[in-house]
Length: 226
Length: 332
Image 1 (cartoon, rainbow over the protein chains, first blue to last red):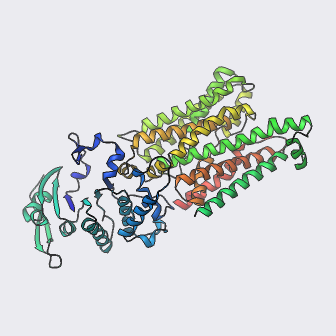
Image 2 (image 1 turned 90 degrees about the horizontal axis):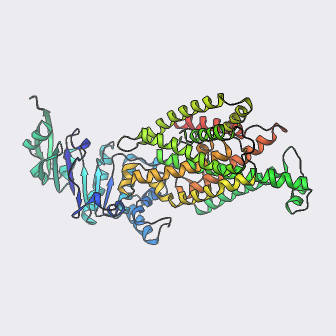
Image 3 (image 1 turned 90 degrees about the vertical axis):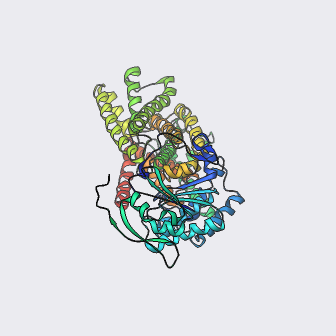
């Protein structure tokens, strides 16, 4: 599980003007889109489902890259969908309309859809935004379990440093598109790194509950900066 | 679920067939159901045969085709714009088709009467007009890709522009043509002959098959660009293709039925309420709803002020506008 932290105005809106993104050693812009979709799923920030769509129907959309033409779902498709619902704890909700769910449940449905895509890599853009504290943990724990038990590579952008440190095996701190520091949470969650990336003076302690570095409190650094 | 779907489709078919049957007996020239039945099996008078086979039947078949075409066009546009209030009328695609046809008649024919073989060119022209409108909307809305909101807003602007142009050309027509053009733009199934049916049927049939083949893609597109890309859709390419389908359906429909509004908006919406938002099921149901809606409205339009007819577009608007307002109030 990888997590990427960055200052909001940087990485977010940066568009690659040169270079290429490689997946399994292949430049993805040269690969057929459907082929890429079988290897990597991307969950955008706050996606929206059309009104009236049911949980299992949205999850079934995740099979799109594996389907061809008008053919309806195969037995294999149904098996994968069931499994995705189960892994995200949504099987009891499968006949409910998505609109009727809580924020955390909705996010789990979208994760289930991405799982139904059966990709090795799952990219998430701030999956915990707009969720309350309990729902944030709920979503992150689902992802952690997938990472540990199903061996999926999970890469996500997240602003909450403490969540990143708690759940990630590997953290990358970005500033204006450049990697400032990468490594284990212990290597990245350091006073100096936080100062360089966010211009903050942070108190990093060890969380007694998780044994991971934890940013207890911080102040903005007053020196002019940029 | 499967059962409910089958039931809804059966009920819609029963509605269409019964409206069809009732509609055959109604009109200035009255025929009893028994007479219709006899005429149908070749036992009626020559006058009865003329009215039934040459006037009423083709017109009813056209109503069904046009209603279905507009409904499917609306369903595609709503998915592409991710906006349940989009439809070919609101986006200016109908106006584009309408302008092309008015221009065609203005320059080449001089009169609506007796178009002869060039009837077969009409869907082509309507399609071109609709395509020009869609092209303008798409290019003006383009800004490193097309966002749904820009698509809708630009569409509304294009609609207003085309409507203004239409008025310019209408004002230069002779009073008789002006009257005809106005009726046509309100929406009127004017070409009630088998020639028109033959002219638009192949278009609609092929396009609808193509759209159904893309039902799964439409489902994914409705989730937005980011999700579509993640699921392996080449978004801009697919959006262009589906836009051409929607334009083709609207263009052919407008060629035969004039600029009928609201059906493209209301039919997909009713279909979603009946069977949910998945396009594989929703689109056929929307087509049936649209077909029934226009067939029924046309029956009223032909008969309510008999012997004179009122444009079917007025009836559609009288039913559609309140529903549209209700939708707006509910979604706001």
